[in-house]
Every structure is written in C-alpha cells, then in structure tokens.
Length: 147
Image (cartoon, rainbow, N blue to C red; front, side, top):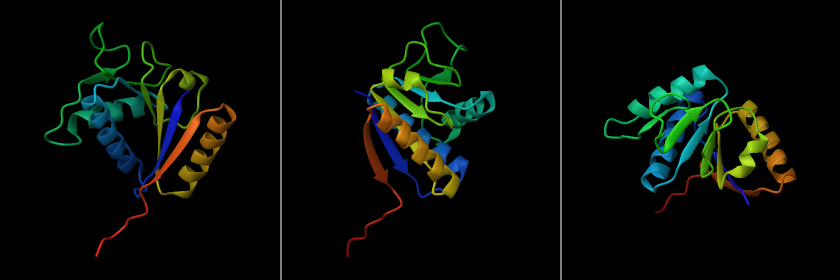
C-alpha cells in the first residue's frame, strides 16, 4: 500500500516549497532511496533541477531530468511525465494526483502555508483517501518551545 505524507510548511512561497523539497530529496538520497520528482511542466522541472545543484553549498545530490543524462539514471530523477523505472519515493510538486502514484511505496506532498495550496492539498487528500492510500500529516507550522 502506498503511504502519502503531507508536509504542512511554514513557507508560503513556491521557492520555499522547492527548497524544502530539496532537503527531503537529499535526505532520501542519503538513505539509499530512489526518488522521482514529479513536476507540472518542463519549466518547473528545470527549476528544481537547477535548485538541486545549488540549494546548499555543501550538498551533492546526483540527479537529472528524465530522458536526459546517462542510460543508467541516477537515484534522483526530475520530470513532468509518468516516470520510467521508479517506484520507491515520489515527491509531487505538480498540481495533479495521478493513477501511477499507486505504484510508489511513498508519495510526498509539500503544502505551502497559503490558502490556494491548502485547498489543492485537500483535493489531493480526498483523491488519495478514495483510492485507499495510507495517509499521514506533518504540521511544520506548529512549533514547540521548551523552557
């Protein structure tokens, strides 16, 4: 069964969401996962591709845009079409929920702290629930302080 994790971000911008995505992708890569980053279009795919090279000075996440690069693709692929050969982790940066998501072990949804993004996440949540996915939420907007 596919597990879906919704991360409710403190960030409100698309760039903030993409930066958080890069951090999660890097973490997954270091834990030996294969990650497909699903984007809306070519422009968004190229944006996240560039950001994966530059989001941190000391980071290195080997990746490429699906269909470009070596025949044996690296563990991280970025694309805007259904993936080929990936079924571990999908980071959904698109506005869509697709039937092929069910072949993944885990789907990650990043939700900026903005009304339109929250409404879209609610629609995705309904889609996943209707298709029997295992749903989890992580509210990063709530901070706890220890005194």
